[in-house]
Length: 207
Image (cartoon, rainbow, N blue to C red):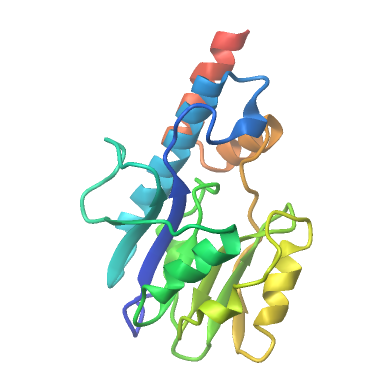
């Protein structure tokens, strides 16, 4: 399906540096290994974004871009504040329909990210941990995110309630990569990606 109205694709992410990302993967992995897995997840995510029809592709980044950044992706810095403020600011930088995802779901595909706002106002992608992996808005309104409690088991439900007055399409439930168990499950669903390949190498090294 090709979007009837070109969409801005937003990816919110941290620079994959040891000790700053995927800290719940340690143990069993070292901070350096956890950062390498985060980089692989981000690379898979950005590759899917590049392959998805879009008006713009924007990485909203906390940190500095590295060699993992593909051509065709703009980089804008994250603002200060809590995650709700940073997500709100990402949408505030858009002047048309936008879909925002994170770097925690390397199993995403262009098919999942190709959305059409012709007959809906929002898209919502729930995550298994109670959060959400995707949020799309036909008319980006930062107020729909500000004040939503983030990183709790009820984050997804709270954000979904903010969309009550909108026509919402729900995207499939996906699993975020937070723990080693998550990593194994997600890698099995996307065995051809950078993330799965790197996890196999690291797992073998730990045996």
